[in-house]
Structure formats: C-alpha cells, structure tokens
Image (cartoon, rainbow, N blue to C red; front, side, top):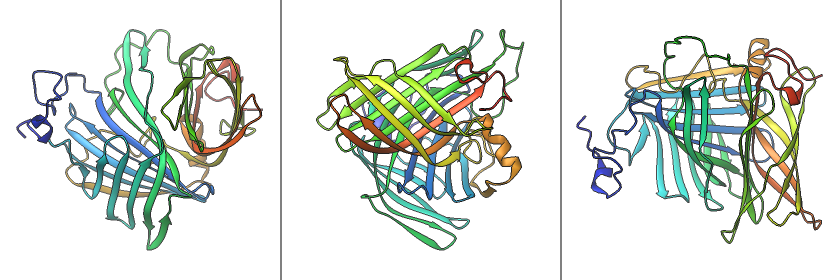
Length: 373
C-alpha cells in the first residue's frame, strides 16, 4: 500500500499526510459504522457494522440476527487498504449513496446469510457529545459519534428463507463513530488501575416518532455520578431541542439485569415536561457474536488472516449464553410512548440499548454478581 487513496483527491485533509494515515498513532484508533433494523414485531432484530483499524492493519464487518431463541452471527475480516471511499470487507459492502441520508448495505451470500438493504434517514443526523473515559490516568475511550434514525428497504436471506424488508414497517438507528476505544488483542495491563474498575451504567435510546427523532445518552459511574448526559430531539423542520437532565427508572426482570423497559422524564427548554415509557420487544446481547464488550468469540480489530469469514449460531436458552448477558451491553427492539405536557401522545420505535455492569448504587447493584430483586 502507498497510503494514497481516492479521498486524497479532495480538499479534506486535516494533517500533512494521506487520509489513510490517522493523525493518532495510538493502536486503538478506530473508525466504525453501526446499524440496526427491525420490523416492530419483536420477531427479528438485525445488527451490523463495519470498522477500520489503521494502526492494527485490519478492517472487519459483522452481521448479527436474532429470531426467536436463535442468534446468528456472520464475521468477516481482512487486511486494511487505502480506499476509504469503497467500504468493503469480503462480500460485505456499505455504499454511501447520499451522504448523511442514504446508504446501501449488501452482504453476498456467506454461509447461508445474505443482505441487500437500503437505509433512508428520516431526520438530520445528530452530532453527539464527545465521549471520554479514563482508567486512572489512562484514556480508555475518546470518541466522537453522530446518530440518526431511518427506514429500511430490501431483503434479508437466512438459509434460503427470504425476508422482505418494507419501509412502512422496518425502522432502525445507525451511528458513525471514530476515535479511541479498546480494539484488537488486549494490551499489556501494567500496574492495576487505582481505584480498580467497579463498573458502569449505560443507556442509549435513539427513537423515531412521526415528526421528530429523539436521542438520549447517559452514562453513570458506580456511585450514580453522571459522567455523560446528552438528550436532544430533532424536528422535521430541523429544529433541535435540548431536553435537560432526564430522570430515569429502568425496570429489570427479577433475578437478572435484563431490562424490560424504562420510564424517562425530560424537560424542554421552556420548562415543559416530557414522559417517555420505553419497552423491550426483543433483546440482543451485542457481546454474543457482535464483538462488543469482551465478546469471547469475536473482537473488533483482531487480525484473523486475509479474507476471513465464519458463521456462529447461538442458542439463547443455553445457560452458558444466559450467564454472559449480565456482563455486557444489550440492544433491544424498543417501542416508546411519548407524552407531552399538553396531553399529546406519540408512538415511537428504535433502539433501547442498556448495560448495567458491576456496581451501580442507584439500581441497588452492589457488585458484579448482584441482580434485581
């Protein structure tokens, strides 16, 4: 590779070097897209993504589908190239048909799974607040992300079964993020962090309603101290409202940390109250074949050789799989009811993503093994 690619023809450089060479030399530099799709039934949930890891020399992609009690994962990995205009790993491609509005996602038949989907954004994307995490003095995450909700058109094929995807029913959210986060093989630990990592509590809800999209992001430390708070809604006409400091009550299935829903109260800039009741229709642990949060089967950015592909299938009733659920983030097909102060009620659909890892005092989780009563 020379380092030069098609993007170097455009006046978009931020450093005196080719676009393919990141300005950050940290091995954990990444640039990744995440997308999900569902038909609002709670019967099927597809999650997918593609990532580039220039300082590891790797690019990879995944498709994760849950239907009933079966979760299927397809993984693809290859050596990185210099062409960032054509995002492709093996038979997986993500074409930017119209920047910030329309994408075309395809997976050629790979071990019985194929995808041909077109994404159309319903609203303008939201640039989220920068996300920074530290372990003692070490920066473990320093990322920027934008998010958007939209509809899907096309098809999903699994083992010969063709699933039609129509935009009047299929909806989802997507984000593009880049920066630093742990990727690839684990780094040498060095001296243990002081104090040790006790856990984190995370809630991420991008939702589409008829005339606006809402994106909520909250992260709390074990004490309940809120280290990230971002809640906005974007109207069809482009207006953006900040919705203050939401009050949140997550309901968990007894004996687990798997949420059934959440009640959220937010405030508009003029002081009016918004109530959001969110329910889970289908849960997908993204650390089971998705590569997130210490997934033992698939970790983003790991070198697996050229033109690598594999398919894994999980029985979600298996006690070993159920036991992993408490130690990672779970994405849910989310249905929401939004009630405004003036009595207006709207139904929304999108992603309900939550993780309660380790200690979290407000939830009553004293350590890594405690569960909801």
